Image (tube, rainbow, N blue to C red; front, side, top):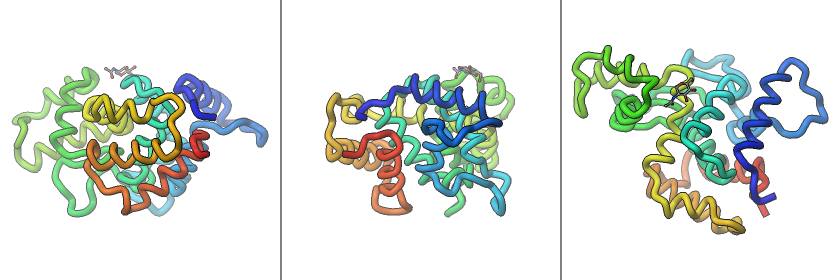
Amino acid sequence: MKFFSSTLFATICAVILAASQTVHADDPPQAVDIILAIMPDSATCNGKTAECTTAADAAPYLIQGFQIYQVSHAAEIGAILATVGTESVDLAFRTNQSPGRPGQGSSNMQLYENNLEFARSNKNLTEGLNRIEGVSENPTDDIKNAVRELVIADPFNFWTGPWFYSTHCTDAQKAAFTKKGATEQELDDAFSDYSLSCVGVETTADGRMERWTEAKKAFGLSE
Ligand SMILES: *[C@@H]1O[C@H](CO)[C@@H](O)[C@H](O)[C@H]1NC(C)=O
């Protein structure tokens, strides 16, 4: 299967949410299963800090983010989930741990400038942002962290991956993921280009490619 629409993804999620108490073994893959496949350490928060979220708790928020920012192709969703899994260490963290950069955080661990831009762009955050005094492009570390606090609350923390993709990646980068009949090699190239030139990271470290490989499998994009 080369295409897995977000409508189907959302439907599957709705099904798991509705039936989470009574899941049967013969059910098709659910959104939570897809997230778990890409972020294998997100089944539990046992032994982790208060910043942790489980796949089950994050699933509805992630789905909501894909819907709000209109990210609908399987390869795009898979790539963003691979980024989120890598950056948050399978949803364990919401703030940058090393080197502990002020203001950096959220599920895709974006920089302060992106958290500020996201908060300014989404009306659900306007009131909270207005309550923080002294917000600017380059404020004190305390103010950077206050803006981050706002962004890393549920559900916003899980909207930033789709937001960053939709607002910061180029049309060409998106077209590479959504191209009809794209080969697996073309999708791998799309992921490398998105990682390097949009997210701004190398694909070689921290299990980024491994999570992308799992994302392709989970969405039926492997040949
Ligand atoms: C604001 O939040 C609500 C509830 O979570 C959501 O339905 C709506 O799409 C959000 N609006 C924006 C612009 O993100």
